[in-house]
Image (tube, rainbow, N blue to C red; front, top):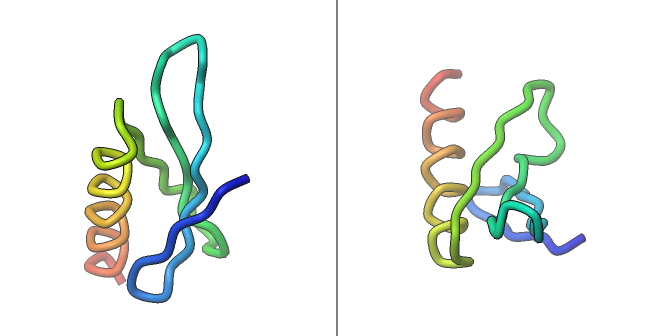
Length: 58
């Protein structure tokens, strides 16, 4: 599994051949926070937005 990092949070990178989409979840937290995108750039953007929303909810 590939990983990316933003603001001390780790996100997974996976690919669904069936859906032709990249997707992942923020790792190491008690909640399930997922994100997805059609390209790696879109996935990275959605990951950053998901982290920002999660941090804002704390």
